[in-house]
Amino acid sequence: MSLIDISNLTFAYDGSYDNIFTNVSFQIDTDWKLGFCGRNGRGKTTFLNLLMGRYEYRGSITASVSFEYFPFAVGDPAQNTQDILAAIAPDAQVWQILMELSKLSVGEDSLYRPFSTLSNGERTKALLAGLFLRENSFLLIDEPTNHLDMAARENVARYLSGKTGYILVSHDRAFLDGCVNHILSINRANIEIQNGNFSSWFRNKQMRDDFELAANEKLKKDIQRLESSARQSSQWADKVESSKMGKGAAATRKKGHTSIDTMAYNAEKSRRMQQRRKNLKRRQQSAIDEKSTLLKNIEVAEPLKIRSLTYHASRLLSAENLTVSYDGREVFRELSFSLEQGDRLALQGGNGSGKSSIIKLICGEDIPHTGVIIIGSRLIISYVPQDA
Image 1 (cartoon, rainbow, N blue to C red):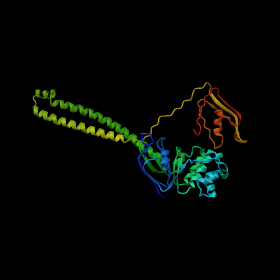
Image 2: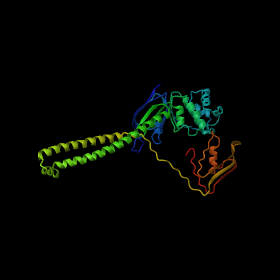
Image 3: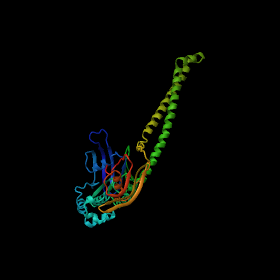
Image 4: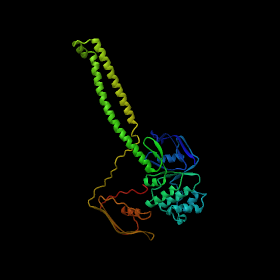
């Protein structure tokens, strides 16, 4: 066990007036399985790049381990997978590589195929296996689930749960729960580390948020009450102050009171009113200051609404007995479905089952197939690919 020590870390991109990190300090145990979470743009990938030494920064980062970044850049994807993994982990034996791949449900034949012929999910698994075979390395794993289906995500989560010494960035809560034992969170106002998985961290955050929201509502009512009391005290103080001289003093003389005694009484009453006004003002300011310390880590997001264009017909598209084949191998066969206005249709299946092929057919790409796919006339289709 050793520590990665981050001390007074300050970083901003060139040309930016706002720091991504300002005097940040914390420690990471190299035996942790650390989940890294935070809103987009908070600096998760930036922090990983700082650990890799890719940017200049102020402060210090000290560690006795070397950092390895995933996704790993493959120089020549035309090489066999075995050669690529041998370059990543030169001290690993073939049997060790095969053992790691078997844990990830990657077949032995993948070693002897060009890396470019592997599916995106197989590439992810192969590179993770190779990186974990490197000695004295601490892995920085950035969004490994981008190309994994549900079964593969569960498989990789089980694999990572048996490893130690990594930081994992992911927006998949179930995936994080399956393989981490600490959470590093970049919040709006601070950075915190907690023991446990994502769900336990999130429950704690919700409890803190609920407490702060309740405290904030109470303080708002206190401030309103103090403002009302302050206005009333101010009016009373002004009224008493005016009675010391002028019309108030003249009125008391007409009633036969001793002018000196009355003025002394009014002066003391005015002093007390003024003191009460000052006390109320101090209490009000104290409540405002306390309120300003709340809600700094409450996340606020506007609802995202995507409205489709109107279309003249109820049916948008349909497929009848659709079969897709590559090099004589059927990916799927005799698939039939339809999509009506207002439908939200999910395509679910393992890697290589033809989900992307269906999308590409709908977009008009020339995919080898039999059967019929019917697209509505003058239908405008928007497409976001996996690698946008």
